[in-house]
Length: 76
Image (cartoon, rainbow, N blue to C red; front, side, top):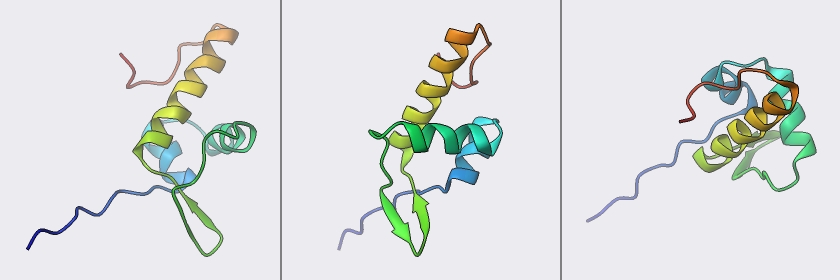
């Protein structure tokens, strides 16, 4: 019998740790970009999949590019 792999879901705090940015920056992106939606909820926690993490990384890099910053690591 095949079993499905359990997807990795991350909280905003874990996303901030993974991207190496302060939590308020991730929370700002998640609250202002309506196209980045949580994949699941656990009580009041919003949980995001890897696609959402990639979207957050992209949005942070876009913000940094407009400001002349260096961007978030992990993007080729």
